[in-house]
Length: 459
Image (cartoon, rainbow, N blue to C red; front, side, top):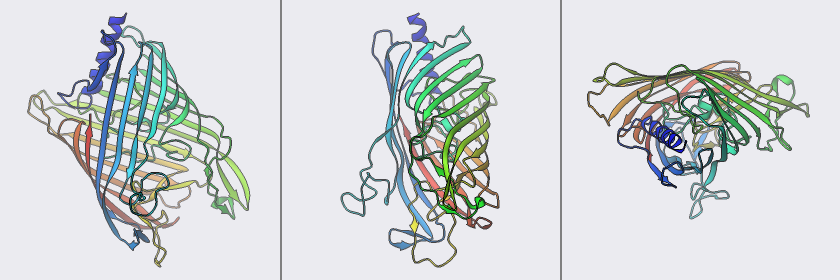
């Protein structure tokens, strides 16, 4: 039995490594804790550095100066993940790091101004994941059913494939953010504390969790009528949330050793999956109308499809990757949240024109009650080399948003290219993105653009 498990573990590690597109990387930084390798520890380290140049929303200043454009370089992610299989049934996962450090913000708690302890300096490390899990029914080749239970700060948050996306192997430069609908409100960077169950039944993969959302203390803006009510997240003793995701894997089976869903296999697997998921939280938001507080349930649903296929023959080595997801979000009446990734802009108090409704910098309407449809696709261009390292993968993405709080729907797009130097382990990504600009809920003033160049290293 130990030999069978050891072989299974090695195969899982090899598949995970090869799925990153490198022909030489192997199983990475993996250390055996016993002679047969059934007990091991693996370390994964990665960083993503962004250089950006983009248009700022009207009414923005950077530092103490009015700005219509901005350029910067920053740390999008610096992460360290370690997991250990202490026995064939028991595993521990820890994952910590920093995110979103710019020259103006993202520093340690309490940092202000400039100087040795400036607002963008010395960011504090924090845990993204920290959980234990136990396999009640081990995954075995000749058995259809498997079941593992776990608990802690975890990423099994249901809803959609991209809600549990790996940040190591995106097709586009990053996630669209609305795939993490509670990000940094009632979760800790897309995670919550709770219990989870995961496993497979034949080609069906399932993930379920029961979680305690983090309490927030956001005060809802008072409105005159219910049509103007703005819902915000919970406060006080939060009620438990429930989440789940079910995915049928028609072709190759994906590893579920860890929760992180691969964005692009670069032609190393034949994958076609259809999935659906949910997240619910009773009394998860509040609104205030004529100084009367009302509570609202959070009910979020999604359905998606993922395709990743090699194309051509052995001399072509092409591949196509595509993903499409539809979200139906209900946070309460007219809930709307504006988000700007690594936003270096602040509101200019001296500006007298029409400000962007989303606020300063690169903020845009990102998450809200309503519907979102997101689709991305990319093609790994052919290579005649027997073991190609340098590869090119152009991609594009389209987003449609229809929020209850805004009278007009919006569309936006992303276009870019991945240049793989050694699969996902060393890549350069260039992307141009647009975002809609609203000046009132019923008035738009076109769109603005942003160019990002990313350097990624993953060990």
